[in-house]
Length: 381
Ligand code: MG
Image 1 (cartoon, helix red, strand yellow):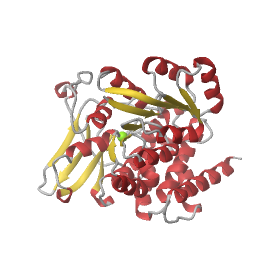
Image 2 (cartoon, helix red, strand yellow):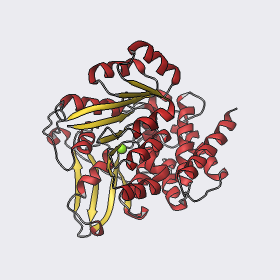
Image 3 (tube, rainbow, N blue to C red):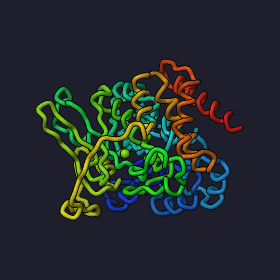
């Protein structure tokens, strides 16, 4: 019986993880859950799974929940609540399904306890890849990617030697605006941007898919996870989203991992690796899919993807600034404050205005993140 801590349990990945726990009640037990403010759904999860601890980031909502459920489990609040729950040494697998920068510090606590980290929060590696990877090595914590592309690459690399890898090829659906011209992007609406053709996901990542910043962040994530130079990380548009990514080896052979797009598969694999469980809920019929196609991404149209590659080149705090500026820009777009095409413009402003520095520790990451958010907030005051 593996004990799970799920950070972000009412988000898209969190709910898929919970579905898996439901499918394997003899294999997994939930000991801790966290949400931002959705206490109605958390209350249902508490009644069903009886966790020992829950965290509600919104303090007012935490109080409200405590009034409703009394002392049936420990209720913590705020970011320090997330840290406290992550420090409780009562779990085996830390599922980082929480969105954004806030996932970083709790993940570090889990690494220090040598836990398996099922990492869906890509921001953690984007902003602090060097710190996270070296801490995992230092403490002997396992980092298993949940992001479907990285899970695919991880699976393709099993039994292989790193020296034999020519390149990895991250596949990208291209999002809802694949066939729109650059000038047409200027007038797209929030609803159009939220309408992803293949994946049902949270709103932040769906917008990131529309700008292709999601793929950019994934390139940075792959850079840290697989210790490869950026020249060996390729992106191919694959509109069907059946091949989740590929690895090309030195003999010219390519391995790929395929399935119907469903996040339950990479989540399950991260929980069961190196084993696999019998699971019948995701069927893939390639005869029905018919065609699989691939082509080059348009870097001039999807500026965010280009900026992510450049951020790897610049190094230091550039990926962290890129990530923070993107989080703010997406938030502003979702609130109708900026146009879709202003997302990369805002990010470029942040990258130009904030001086780059070396990332030495968590404080330097927090500083770069904070400075970026301050700068962009001022622009909207
Ligand atoms: Mg992905």
